[in-house]
Amino acid sequence: MSGKNGSAPRRLGVGFIGSGFNARFHMQAFRAVRDADVLGVWSPNAKNAASAATLANGYDIGVAKPYKSIGDMVADPAIDAIWLTGPNHARIENVEEIVDAVERGRGTLRGIACEKPLARNVAEAKQVASLVKRAGIAHGYLENQVFAPQVETGRALLWARGAATTGRPYLARAAEEHSGPHMPWFWRGELQGGGVLNDMMCHSALVVRHLLTKPGAPLATVKPVRVTAHIASLKWSRPQYAKTLKKTMGRDVDYAKAPAEDFASTTIEFETDDGHTVIGEASTSWSFVGAGLRLSAELLGPEYSMSWNTLDTGLKLFFSRAVRGKEGEDLVEKQNAEMGLMPVVANEAAAYGYENEDRHFVRVFLGKEQPLLTFDDGLDVVKMLMAAYQSAEQGRTLEFPPRGLDKFVPAVARGAWKPPVVQA
Image (cartoon, rainbow, N blue to C red; front, side, top):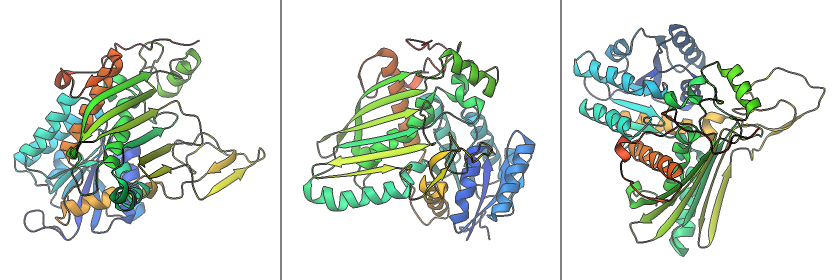
């Protein structure tokens, strides 16, 4: 029952903008979310929207249907909230259409949840936040790794038992690594906004800050003050791999002429509200060769530590050379092989944090919880990413925030970046 035009609904009607890999991961997660129904999908590709709606119906998470436009979906009284999962280069356009429908009185929304990153650069992120706030819509920033069960539990226990008796943690590390994105637009700097730094450092930079922040305290109590970063194209600009990438992703993905970085590392120095200096180390890669997607994190303090690695699973399978089968991702996301000893992530939507984050933001938009992450936090992440790009381009440590951050667009996004050395 929806209370879109009155009191809070007992169940939240959710509509998706976007029908690709990320939207489908969220749909898997909604199988574990109470008090919400996925009722709609919009995509510029009507066939993809219909396919995603069929998937949602198959998961029994609501009676979903495709919509002809974003405005039509917002106008439907059954839709209470939007999950914004479309590509980065469509973010402004999508948000403008949402806000236009609301401001013209076509419909109302209780909330918008936006997938990472909030936008491609600081100027765009500020525009997204401003538009949604102007329309008076509650907002949440979707960062699944912060909600991963191991991260949540480990952080809570270390702060409660370790930090409470021996002092606050001082070093956090986080990494996300896999063999490369699924869709061509991710590989194109001008569309995605950069390379792997923009695509995945948004996770790791926020995770290290989150781990270093006392539970219950705002992220602002751990303030970034200096950023040092490095980017490189380690694999995909090599001639044989650039050729493979072009063949797989299409002629517009040409890393011989317009590469993006496939590796990035960042060190962020933070100052805490109680006068300590703490460090966050983050690294990301599209050039990782292993079983598949690997997420990892560590938190270290005076007399304690924690570690998390998604490939340290409780289930492993072995397939000999005699086992033949088609390529897929049924064992782990970004799976690189179907033979040998393989770790299996039995419920990726839970392990990576999608279930917990979707459950949280449903409750936020139903008025049952306060948001742990908003568009303001998403904007802060974009600022750290752009500072990292600036540091990498200048080859030096920068005070945060560096000059010109609001207007900065990475060289990768402008098609002006070349790897220092392209190996044969």
